[in-house]
Length: 571
Image (cartoon, rainbow, N blue to C red):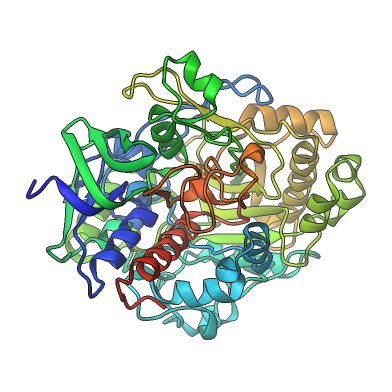
């Protein structure tokens, strides 16, 4: 290391941390910045194939913390995979790469909850434009029917490539056309316009069929004042009184004169805070950790989107993946062609993704909805808030599937999630993985939503244009009764890996109600310590969350640059 003391230390190189480091480093003040990453700096050459996006978390275990949940009470006590990225780029190196920004009402709710218009929809659009490099046009004019992003809402000169593929799989348009004929579904031409309802061609963080990570977008050709140190795990934050002055790592101590910013994600950030003596006093004492700041919300309020995958065996003509995927020789040939030329089946397969957000207005008369607080009922009924989502074009994730069969897999996700869980310490040993409990389906409303959404999905597959191709169901509920559908949900529900809210933002005076950071990302009760990652969202956003993590990084950068007078070119 060139030095051991810096102006700013950022812990974690995921989307928030990488963008934040980039923005601070490129200001005219040129502050010295240390970006610490627990995982490796290098990655295998094939980790960036977009065609592998659904399997990257398994194919590259060195880039994955490989966390698990504790047994989930409402999912037949199953232990679920809770993958998190480990390496430069964080989870953007192993996620499904979908880029969705969520509804207008989520941003406006955030602004209202924390008392700062800085987070509202209008400001969010402006801020995203600074880092997006959006593809507006499709090369094949036949796709214009399905994809026409609103240019005024998206950036085109930023570092992060956001695109749809040049060539779509045939079944993509089949499914979109079917949705157009289903009441309550339809087609949405811009899933990121803030009011998106309908099935969409969702863009990916990718360019030319290769994954774009936070590292490839924001950590290339960095200025000399930004030092990146990998394979360095932060054990705890170092304090003088209540001022954060450095971090203790497996590679020694590093110190900062201005700020320590935790961007380690919604699992590891609360772990670091608790190991540093910041959290619920009684829980810390149970592990023999001296309490520095009693902040009971740390690690609490964990929210995530559960999802469920249904599968149908289809006629062989439905899609043309099977000859490549079921033949090792054909697959090896496709991999060689893509590696050398960037063409062939792997430039098409799994590069398109259909995604749609939908209402579920029947739930508004359900007893579980009426039992929610008035504030929560009003939020869920807002005009841009979805209650469920589907993803099409995914591979079959069921290990019992016959690879020689043509299978349609559709995932459905719950939004408006009411169940809350926690991240807790397993011990005072920094090497021990935390205890992750998303507490899926604990809420009666979430159970009702899971039932209603399952029925909506089954109705979609029975629509004209899809049902003609169905040979037989492969993995669906045994029947239409509530008990049969819920039994299936308990057997097959899994995590989307969107953990959020574990160090949530809130107003001063709300610490006993879970608030951990203020509207400027400062950790309550401390000086020189901030959090900038998905931990800080006050509630679970209704979208896939990598875009929110980038937004958090950009927002924290703007706050810090203004506060310290760094004069950066951030809008």
